[in-house]
Image (tube, rainbow, N blue to C red):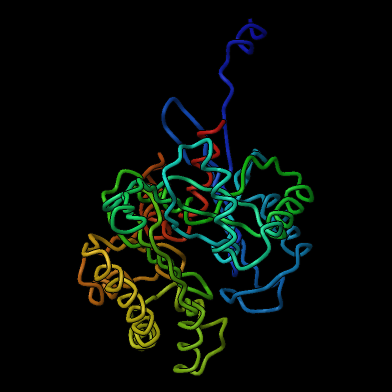
Length: 369
């Protein structure tokens, strides 16, 4: 009887999403049940000790060190991962994204034309990168005028989202895959994982505000596509450093205080809001310039700002962002798309922004399985 029950028993499909950031690695394991994605486990491993820096500080590790850290996280008993089938998110800085206008020659010829045109937009030899592209729905008139006078004519055009990833980065991630025994189905740029996790079905245009340890990345998204991006070279580690300086404590202690208290008040009655807001306000100012520039050029208003990344998960950060952006500010919660245990709902709502990329990668991996 047990023999036949094993035959007809449905196999559980599980998948991992892995996000290697500058200060930590995040992993999320989901399983499929009918049409639902269910959270099985998740975990995070700080990279500080592998790079000789404090927790929360950015690192620049070798492939060997990253592979070692990934292996350590995969074998962590508390995380208890049960599959090695995964999708990897690649850092945005390792890629180049551009929107280019091309004659509408049909999809068959488009591939050849894009490869030729791409040389104008990619500042390195084409042989050094892997190129992908997709057609973007037009925001405005899809015709351009060529010639003049009697020879004037209109040509129908399409916008192309051109994506290029450095081959050495892809090689690095393949090396990590081989050294850790992972079965990797795809590598994708982190912003696409983010869009899948928090923006699916959201009407745009919206802005993603992704604060990591060393940088803050901004993306304008409309109809699921990226129209503009910008990187600010300030992240949450600057907030930690400012807390350490103001309170005259170690970076390690400042990081613990930042994560546990955020913009609140310590037991000793010390208000951390100023230490946080001084750094954050500079980031918000640059983000507002980016946002206003887009609105001025397109004559369209941003409807919402979505906060993602570990830096935006600080207590009180969303309220501070809402004061600086004159539009709706939403703390990204990728776990809303996933069925989670009731006792974890509040915890995951708070930590959600930090695991956005990992959840997005896991969702795609699960879909492909």
